[in-house]
Image 1: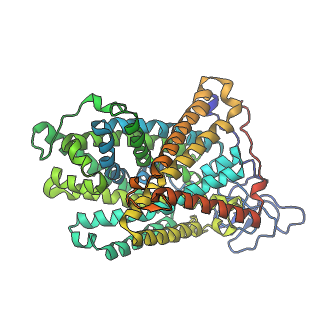
Image 2: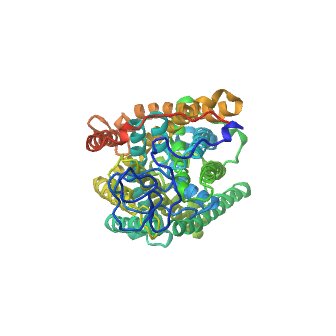
Image 3: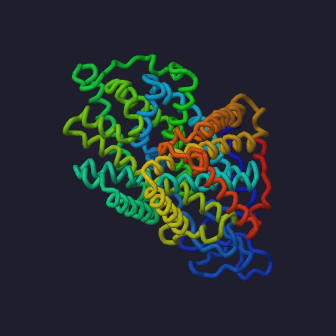
Length: 549
């Protein structure tokens, strides 16, 4: 159908015709009259590119003049690798551990139903990612697509939101990986030592960043091992929990599962709103598969499909484990530990598995470990894409010509994330949790922008049949509307300091909202400074997908 027909794959901002990249150098594809380097000439690493010469990025987008040579490695990974990265970026075991207590406190036994309802906007936005990626297989995803459809200012803010989600969450994920890893090997004393945990967290972030720089193939192999280990541990835990419920050997207030648990409206409207906010956080991260589009085989199709299938696999995992946890522990036990967040899984591991509790602890540790690495990917690739379009300084577009990875942007994201983690961690553990809570605002913002961009970009095709209307317009807009509603509800909720983990007012507001507003304000200031320094990016104009054949 028309919805499956990709338009041109070169962004409208391009002023050069893409030519095949030359490994180890950069192919100049459009040089103005009088330029010493003719179009089509391979420029070896280290060779100066004459001013004004346009050189292609990984997908053929011209970069700023003088951008260091190099290109992302094409065809480095396949569909299954991208799927594993998309799954690991969501950190399923950690996400479940973090949300299951607060979720049950809100909606009781209907937690599986709320996880099911949270899947709906995620699937709709994943579909928007798929079709936009077919139009523009750019590693900058939301930044590139929103720029094309809605203009450079909105696109810049979307890219900034993606980069900041990485900064906010990388330290928290690494901290959880260290804590649960120490618990899994019986080093409880070290897990409780704040300085030791902080030092190991910083070292882990550096190690994961080094793996990202080493090469996409290396990262993919590592992620494949971690996703298999994580899912296996979760399946064992869920199976044992359900078996003990039906065998009557549980140690807590077990209750047998019922189909009614899948009704998300069973606990009432206000409870559903809060539950959906938690659910959206649990699903967030699958788009890391699409950020690797320029490094994936069949880049126009495979990354988008990997993103969609990631949400489907997550749905099955979340609903199954939620059923098992609620059935075994009962609502009172889980609700009573809502403030413990991921620590509830440590307690449940001992209750369900006894001496084998390390299995679930290992699942959470590997989950957070995998997500530490994969969360660096969207932030670094987005910064790379922004630099190629001159929305950021050209240095961020530097790619290691031997390994084909964006080393400069990766280390910038790493350094910023480490500074953020250390500063917030020194304030308090609750401040770190508040920092993580602020994520929901940024996530809802750039996901909603992507859905709107899809409908706007494909607006000429929407009336060509029910398929294009639903897949390219109504679906993405519905997903965006749901996320905007959740964004508004979240802002109202976070304005009350009593709803923050720290329960402390920052400037009269809850800490998560202050953090989100600070990052948004910083983004606007940096955007204005960049525009004053180089306005080339802001001369781009939004466009529209051509009519389908």
